[in-house]
Image 1: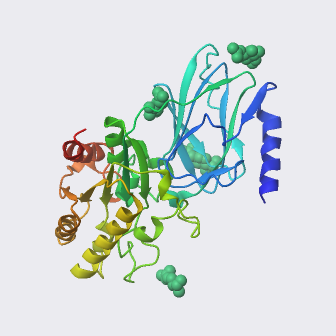
Image 2: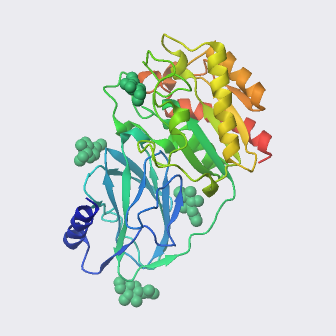
Image 3: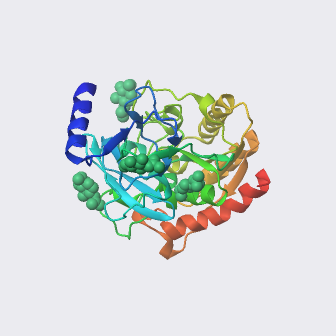
Length: 354
Ligand SMILES: *[C@@H]1O[C@H](CO)[C@@H](O)[C@H](O)[C@H]1NC(C)=O
Ligand SMILES: *[C@@H]1O[C@H](CO)[C@@H](O)[C@H](O)[C@H]1NC(C)=O
Ligand SMILES: *[C@@H]1O[C@H](CO)[C@@H](O)[C@H](O)[C@H]1NC(C)=O
Ligand SMILES: *[C@@H]1O[C@H](CO)[C@@H](O)[C@H](O)[C@H]1NC(C)=O
């Protein structure tokens, strides 16, 4: 399978790389990654969680084409210095996406090019095969701009499900999801912190949306330890990253339909999940537990109890959205997420003294 994919990839490069093109492999030491990436195959890095970020500092090239294969309709935000493009990386076979065609990269300039996976994990795995650039391109070692880091864990709210949609929306459309505009994206940008996200629409602590079984299969705490959450054996190495702060927004799907978990079962399971996360990080990160804006009591009362029990800061977001702050299916839109960020940001800043 791998051999076939690589063969197709080189065929694509023969057809599409310009005559002076070269491929920078994903394992090049000047490529910077943020987020959970499976690097076990040096020719094909794989990832799925939202917000995985690939960055490079490059000069002396007029073209730039990341090569992706996708097991679903995945979108990326491409930041070239201060300009943003949206990349529709939906080809199942490795495909070079030339984003410089209308851009005329100036070979005498150095560019910071950053790709961010907008879409959530269940949309599909992205395989990154490298970047095609001009053969004389110069790569620079990517500077560390921040020592701060923050991790967001949650469901559709954290993913930015339907954030770009105007209600009433049709069936789920991955192009309406954009992690950069979510409260996590906005807060990490404002704090200049690295962002890690493990979120999946419909997931709960004990019960997933629409499930009649408690506990449901594959709740968020079950998927959380995985690098690629659809690969049940691909465990993340927690030594690779230690966040300063962890923001969790779970519970909405546990309580938005019958049957609902009991107070004790929910609280003790949520506490166990936080204990598990704490056991993975030696640096004693600060925890923030959000409830809302798509659920209220009793869920939020229980989340507050959990926060008290584990020494976390509770952030209440019940009933905060105005009518014009909804995207698809009662989810916060861009303005709704901006409001969430405006509530959480000062609390996080104060607590971390940032
Ligand atoms: C993205 O690409 C896929 C596959 O080619 C296509 O089905 C989809 O409509 C595209 N999305 C947009 C927003 O153009
Ligand atoms: C490169 O751009 C990204 C996205 O705008 C930004 O987060 C990052 O801090 C920039 N890095 C450098 C080294 O300028
Ligand atoms: C820039 O690239 C061209 C070929 O694309 C190469 O001949 C030249 O040496 C490169 N310049 C530098 C400064 O690397
Ligand atoms: C949950 O997992 C069990 C064991 O793997 C399986 O038998 C069952 O069908 C699953 N239930 C659902 C609703 O997927």
